[in-house]
Image 1 (cartoon, one colour):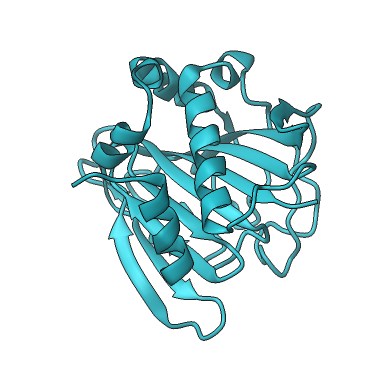
Image 2 (cartoon, rainbow, N blue to C red; image 1 turned 180 degrees about the vertical axis):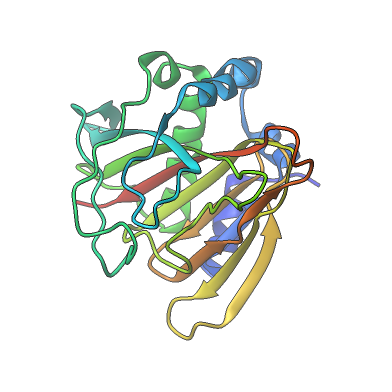
Length: 240
């Protein structure tokens, strides 16, 4: 089966989201981007502990970066805090959260450039209009690390919207963890629209954040005697 930007965008328009397997994502990325993938994924080994977890959890590491569309190009902004309202994040929202910046080398990776450009192209097609000049794009690198005696929570705030226009969630890696089911719901009715699990590198979901809610079930270690984690890239787009 051949996957296209148009077919992904069509799914977003119809259901509010599209799940794309890692194998299909590889059809859409250049050889240069794929050749750089392993080094890009290794950058998740250098994240910092999230100090803002209101539930007291110490299971999340992350880095953050912000970009703006300027004259058609995606330009990195000076480092800034991440902010969500309490309406969109009842657990950790309502305050400015300063996370360590994404490393320059990660931003310069051909893989990063390809993923952010692909997301922009898909959302342009899904919305039948270019993502507008002045739009804010935020990049989050997340690592969720369960312990032998406690789960890790990819979405500790539960079923939610991110409070933006569009969202891409890309699995970077998944080692010695089970569960972590992604559930999608209608933002209007709360009806379940689908469930799936990001299991393989580059498994991706593209979301219309205005229309759907999403949630990911907690993850647990498969072998409690060994380290385990779930690494994900989240890209959000919101218009000016």
